[in-house]
Length: 286
Length: 313
Ligand SMILES: [Zn+2]
Image 1 (cartoon, chains in turn yellow, green):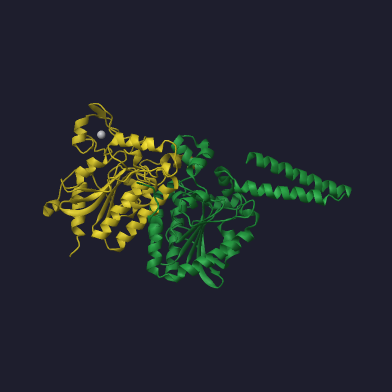
Image 2: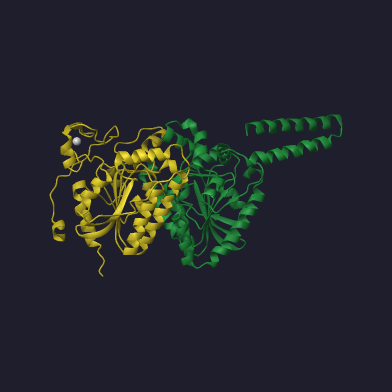
């Protein structure tokens, strides 16, 4: 099986046309949807069957955590960790509990990240997948704790870590606790790194704020999906601060590649294969 | 507080009037003056004990509030400032260098706000670019090499939001600091002296001991930014300051900081000399304790210190 993944695949590179307006790649209900990028009317099922990538222009729509795990992890190998960790309200922030409950109902998951151990082309790894549909994938105590535990588990078991990032940034309702998750996760990754273990960070749309300024940017290898928004500050805030329009393609994956902050942009359909190769090439000789 | 402010103002006016009357008419009003002075003092103590979070925000941002360089000047001797990240440029919103603390070499780093408009423009109001964090990290690694402790003063509204900052990897720069500080092989003490805003503050804040000055604040972002993001209304900053829990008491209660450093009556700017003395004493005591520990236990404790933060079930 390993040999298979080294086979050269021919594919056409599609460039994502830079958008004036930031597209909101959410698939609404209904049979047909208009692609945010090329304006083509696409049969919704076609997009779903195409890993949520527009068959006409290659635009990558956002994907939830369960779909992502299905796409990336070998079938039947994913064992979830800490699925029972529940969010509290450390600041007594008004209506926060209700908000969490609504998000749970909307997404069917309990928090904005799913962590576990699974195999990719047979190679074992600790895998964390964030879900931007759960409160914008914001990082509060539970997200920070689950990521930290997952990385610690990988350190103990001497396994590589793969994190799929998708986050609007800090969980505002948890205030300073949210900020401190940045230090906590970065600390866990430092310990994993000191053991000579591999961490691959995969940046998907959107990866911003406190997640960018912590584990997202700490990968030994950093991969991004085409067109993904990746940055620290939000574009609206920047525009308001500097009072000028942002250049085309600002904070997109291609922009980060050009400025030297990511290793490679990889189309969604190729990511599993690439991860499989990378895991294989970093395999410890025991 | 509004009432107390009014009372304070009334009393101050009365005091002024009494003094003037006493001077111009040659009447001895010492007894009356003293009584008003005492009343004023009591009221002030009361007022500063009960500041609202928003009043603390304003005090933390006060134009006369001492900056990192003011404390460095008062606490250390022979401060020699070092510049630049050896990569892109020198960021004047973070300063750093070496100094002596009673004969002992120390690396000192801090956010630096301007003390007037002109300096504030040069220092970008204490909002660093990526190269600021990279300079800080370079100096920390230098401290590690020469086995000297690191003292950080935190005072920033937050990391700067701009095109250049993004192009040069604001997120990456902060992330690397968090990771490297978590395992820096020398003691680190961080003190929030004014505003501890967002990742820009935390990038100097992964330390063995973390303190806040009594009227400083430490938050995920500015109350204005918080209100703008959560309520789409930046003018509700005062309300945001209330719900965000950003005061030194809040963070002490959350066990996120080690302790609060009391400020002189009226705030740090009223008597920086006394405040600097107490900070100096604290640093000397802490360093004695931290330097006694072997490296492994020091780093373990630092890891656990941040590892345990978070509320979940
Ligand atoms: Zn399309």
